[in-house]
Image 1 (cartoon, rainbow, N blue to C red):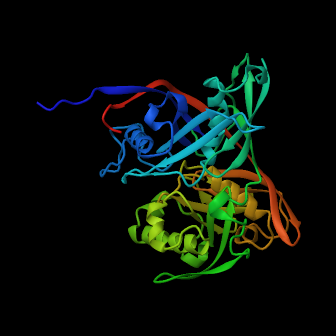
Image 2 (image 1 turned 120 degrees about the horizontal axis):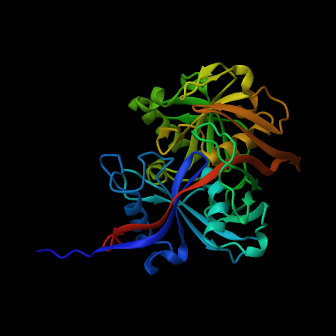
Image 3 (image 1 turned 45 degrees about the vertical axis):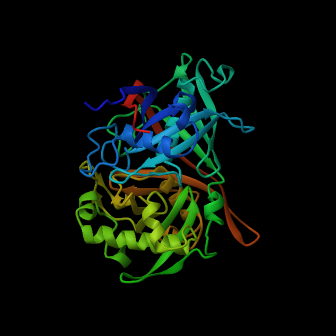
Length: 396
């Protein structure tokens, strides 16, 4: 009879942040072999989420079979001056055996401050009895600072409230976020506009040639005009995710956009870098019905945006892509800015498949180049479960 190692249990917190969910770990709670980057860490996170799953369901793990829910976060008390917590994000592939560490998750960023307080990673002297706890987060994937303003009541994180976020069923407490200096994505990205242009002509063999705004802000993103690729900008998930040919075209566009942005050296590398860059398409305001049945009027939004994540149209909007939208909207002449009517804009409200979202950005022209000092948006977060997650002892 074959002998199998028993399961081990690892302290974990399961949280919703914005329109995403993920499993959060304190780095010191991980098995010793997984406290640093490498195969052991990736193997444990894959097993926790239930990947790789050829059925695409993640039945044997905590993932929920979508890019929004197949996520893991590792937190640590920060040793970086001026920061409270280090935040490392892993996008766990659903059907492939890899974890993509190339970018941030803006939605789960809203859960980092609350979770750090919950895990005891924040100096108690910083936490008011009632009020707001400002948590300075070092986003380790991209080397950026995020400031979370976490509401506190009776010395505890205030999770309940009346802040409504389209894409999330129930209201909760608002967590305002500041993404400082969101452009220039570290060693991979370079300048905010990696080609030096606010609009490029993107040549995609076998697909076509399209105007595109290629931007590094929040997360590397390729923006296209909806009409140029045969869409209206009012599409919902079923309109695209059930069209295999369309998904293949988007992946080809993404690969060639990544190459033009300097993120990869060969289009074949895109298959091993699923999390970044993102592809999104924009359109001027129009009436549409959101996935919840809520009617969105053209007058309610400045523009429409649809974005793909991990090969599928996102059910709402990735937080990091929202940062890219706000940043691009603030720079005159980008496709995002033009879809919103042009001019100088400090904030936009855009329509996505689940409703609307407002995002702001502070942009300025310096030495002939556009710079963005911060992007701002509000999300909410809530602990769904806490305790231990169990994985087979031989999985790593």
